Length: 562
Ligand SMILES: Nc1ncnc2c1ncn2[C@@H]1O[C@H](COP(=O)(O)OP(=O)(O)OP(=O)(O)O)[C@@H](O)[C@H]1O
Ligand SMILES: [Ca+2]
Image 1 (cartoon, rainbow, N blue to C red):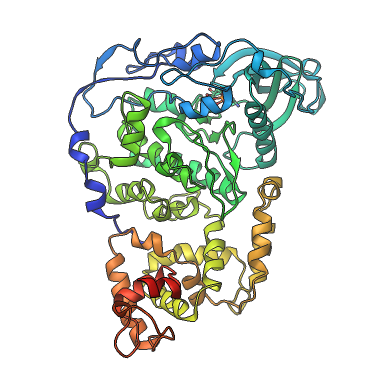
Image 2: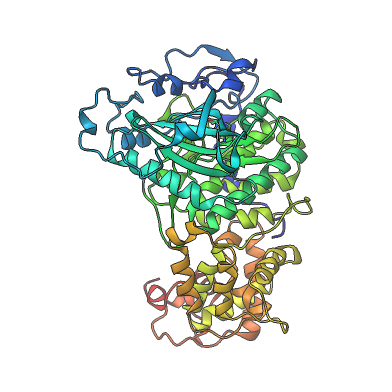
């Protein structure tokens, strides 16, 4: 993955209007988070979520917020609200401008609120003080009273059953616990211990993080991180997200509130929490429910067709906030935020951007690309030059390689030779990521991998989540495809993403050079009699335009239509 900037023209539209210094109204208010409540934070204003949680009547999210003057294009980050469509989905109905929870319990008659968890919470743990609060639950510290954990401090997320007013809300809690339990084991993921229930609540017992939320740390630093400090955070976030994605889990609510530091030390490890909105997704599947928090939501989520790439967008938003202290997409209302996400591009003109490294900006542009096919995966982001040479990076296996392998094997031999030509144009830095993936697939001593390797490499890393998400079925299907052994050269052609390369400035150079190579080695009269004239020379060989279409995997039928 060489540094090659994203398309500036595409990304610079609409910037000017975002860059004016203005009086802004922050539409969010502070949560009840213990740590945050007690610390003075200059730009802080209270969040409507806390009142929501107490099932108060309708709360206006905007009217009670004071006007503040900020010397920034946008106000600094504050806790993000969940998207109203999500609240409606979970709680039954939400009025157009109010994120309210229906009152009374008429709608939960007949709902099965038994989870099959142990009922022995009280005999096992002694609940302590509240350490945090979200929309769906509050979290307390607790002490284990018996067993192997006796005397140990833990955190307990308490999810009141009175909040579970729809079948969807109940299903979401079941899934949250199932995913959290299955995924546990990564060093940047809060350790799950057990789940309990009684008449009133579900209790999720987990490792206690005493260092507070990433959001609090951003705010206590005055809103900004140095590049070096931001890298330390991003490597940890990417590492745990790459792990989730490989297992077939999309988090869907990545934001600084959902990352906690284990201790108050500056160099404390960071841990992901809150799988409350997570879901399983197979590599070739698209989800369609609108879920997440407005500032961090990806455009394709709003278009109701998304996969793991949506998390990568949220990671782009987090990185942007870390580096400049402002949100890239901001407006006073939810619909305004959505419009910004769909239509505007973040500004990189104002301070501090001109003084930041081109690698940092390139990294961001490749995450905040509105076309999800052009976005970096988590494993690719870890291989990006901005993070290169950072200590503690372990590039994980990337499921996109499996998807690309399947597409490659089903391609015509003509497309295969076009991809081989394109792969020959990659720079050493770009090949580094592919080399890592090849190595992870476990090549033989003489440098070949077979389709079987695609299975053995994944089995080593599989958790129960991978079974539940049916990623293992997908891997079995890919590894059973009939294809010859691959050396690194052909593997590079297999695992090259044409869409991603197309999102880079250097695409034109790559594709022109690749066409030259293809002309030399692979171009021959095509067999499709009715190829459109602009796709073929008079002797039947592919034109440059035809070559580009071929790289994208356009079928012969589409060629005929073109
Ligand atoms: N393991 C933990 N250790 C310490 N504090 C925690 C832990 N887990 C959660 N918290 C605190 O509790 C808050 C709420 O937890 P969590 O995000 O899981 O709840 P939620 O209701 O699902 O949140 P949201 O409103 O984002 O959906 C967190 O933001 C954090 O401050
Ligand atoms: Ca949360």
